[in-house]
Amino acid sequence: MWKPPQRIDFRPTRGRIPTRAEAAASRLFSPVALGPISLAQRTWVPAMVPWRATEDGFVTEAVLDWYARFARGEPGAIVIEATGIRDVPSGPLLRIGHDRFIPGLAKLVETVRRESRGRTKLLIQVLDFLAIRRRPDADKFLDRFLAITDAHRKALAMPTATEAEIRARLATLAPADLARILAPRELEALRYGARERVTDTHLAHIRDLPRVLPETFAAAARRARAAGFDGVELHYAHAYTMASFLSATNTREDGYGTTIEGRLRLPLEVYAAVRAETGRDIALGCRFLAEECIPGGTQLPDAVQFGLAFARAGMDFLSTSRGGKFDDAKQPGIGEAAYPYTGPSGYECMPHHLSDERGPFGRNAAPTASIRAAIRAAGLETPVVCTGGIHNFETAERMLAEGVCDIAGAARQALADPDWTRKTALGLGAQVRLCEYTNYCEGLDQKHKTVTCKLWDRVGLDDPAVKRTADGKRRMTAPDWSPPAAA
Image 1 (cartoon, rainbow, N blue to C red):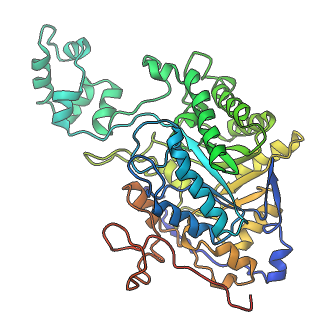
Image 2: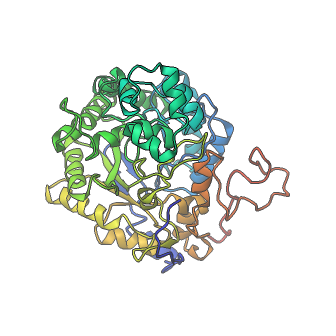
Image 3: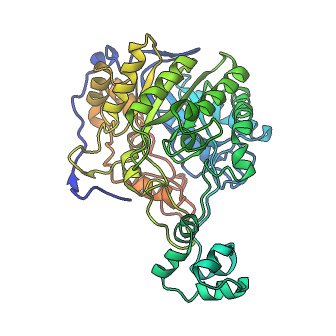
């Protein structure tokens, strides 16, 4: 993962630890409404992909165990990992693209309700993504994958050469010479793996996305409601389809790009279709980027307009993130796919404890505050969720008090200690296991390995009851915690 060259070492602190009475009187532990539902407290576990589903996208016992462990911490809300809305293979990522996934998802809902004693609301994040290929071996790419055109013949001054002769000639070229022959997208496919974009409107399935996606998202939301989820979070962030429509890099000229209105058009149409399907029975909102953090990408003024448009459309909540784009991702190894959290924009999404002067804690706070302020100035009360480096009560409470957000989300801190908010609520904040922000978890995610935390995944391995990863070297969930009897 990319890190800022300054490499200033930041260490998390417990901050001010409230007593049980102080916690009970705080903003963090006060209720908040999200449309038709109410959270008992303003703590939020954002979507994280733990790579525990089957290769066909079904809920497994490992998935149930993962979310049960978060639920026992009794946060205000948990958002289930990014879940694919299409009925297409996507590896061990949860899917909701067919009714056959409903029973497993319903069991997941039941598990969280039981383990949280009914105190945690459960939402599911639904997403669409476009195709991305693994980085190919150069010889195979030139011999099999590259489509030979007259442009190659012209560049090589071989106008009458056969396809085989062109491929043979390309194979002899040095990388710098090859870079002058191949078109930019061809060179990208060689160096990074081919990747579809929403601007590839010469492809029928890309051109038809505005026609297909509203109903596909709506069908997914119908299944989420049938499974019993309390809400749906539309994934409009990071490197995926809907975020790409919102991006300043979206130059589609069919009314679904180029201008702010054009870039907002499909996200609003998707929302309208989902709302028509679900009505007001469940909470419905989205996660979107406060800033893309790439050259030429969406910046805060556009994100403010997005937030206003989503709030005016009637979304029940908005959750902000930042960065996490393919555009500046690190070149993957041969046989591997590009990972959108390995470049500078990926760092902005998951900042490391080795940072620049801004540090890794609350990096998304100021942009989120601007978005929320614009929504409030418009007379709208849409709750806003902010995430990014929140790891103690003092930080979360200050952000709520200062109007940065209405709900404090913590992913890595919740992974480090699923009980951190419960401990804090009981006046036992000194017992919280603090995330160190080394991004050990992110490294596992990058390799599509079972995600765990280095602070607990080697603890208690001598216990035969502990469930382990496939290699037997790590435990799958954090050790359980029970408050003292007096608490």
